[in-house]
Amino acid sequence: MAELTNETEKSAKKVCLSGIQPTGTVTLGNYLGAVQNWQNMQNDFNSIFFIADLHALTVRRDPSELKQTSLSFFAQLLACGINPEKSMLYFQSQVHEHAELAWILNCNTYVGETSRMTQFKDKSAKHADNINMGLMDYPVLMAADILLFQSDLVPVGIDQKQHLELTRDIAIRFNNLYGETFKVPEGYIPPMGAKICSLQDPTVKMSKSDPNPKATISVIEDEASIIKKFKSAVTDSGSEIVMREDKPGVSNLITIYAAIEGKTPAQVEAEFAGQGYGTFKLAVGEAVAAKFKPIKEDYERLLKDKTFIENTAKGGAEYASYIAQKTLKKVKKKVGLISF
Image 1 (cartoon, rainbow, N blue to C red):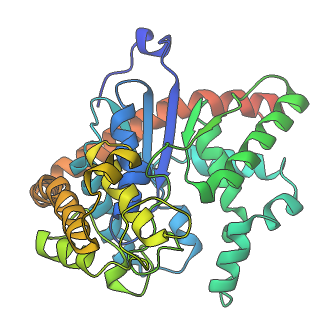
Image 2: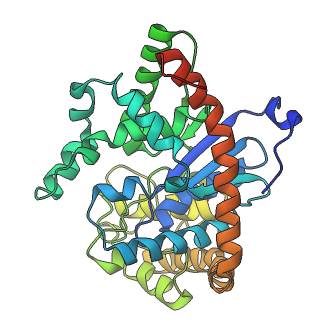
């Protein structure tokens, strides 16, 4: 873990923060929509990334399975290029300031604001037997995650924009009530790869919870499986390889290939002009497999070194807590809580 110095504290670099829930594995959608951007941003921002294991509790999980997937996710992020010498990487549950600030922000958030969140409605419909307060309160904990570190920039997927807007509202309200306390964060949605869709239903986002195993790709999946899934990916009528609204299947594959290869959709269209879907799907599969091969190898190596993972996570949490405590102390003082 990089040492905190006065120079770092006064750095002109902006603070970038993002978290990811430890559900299953890091998918192609997670990688292109979030993790690859995290890796690219490490040199340009003071970067803070965490495993959102507290958020994961909103859905009932087997305790041993949650622990296992959390450790696996941590190793996957390291393998994907998140460098603990450049970034802060830790488990959310190991930094108590997240939950502590969330309670104070709860007291400055209205029920109507959280109950109208689209994700709350969607998850309530999917988990009708477990509509818990955590599910409704999820956006307030997310606001605490962000505001705790005076974040300037928050890479968010399209489905999280509403939560970021609530975070901004909470920050502005708190600042108006108690004086300047929080930075009001800005969202960042990458121009490519922000939304990767299912390989079997290109009208919906690629999801770890998809019951169809052919719909998603994992960063630690073997080469043969990746290529096989792309060969069976759903395309559209006709044979033109163009990015168009009426061709969601091909458009999704163009988006994936462009993001993996660092090209524009127009360049991809030109590269495969006059070629068939079969050729294109194979090329996309091979490109993804080649990208993920070293990640899989690094992940398998890291997973064997549990001491390294534990020490890295502990160091990240201690560093995060040190930074977070500064904001929390200021907040407590503002609202009138006793401090000795």
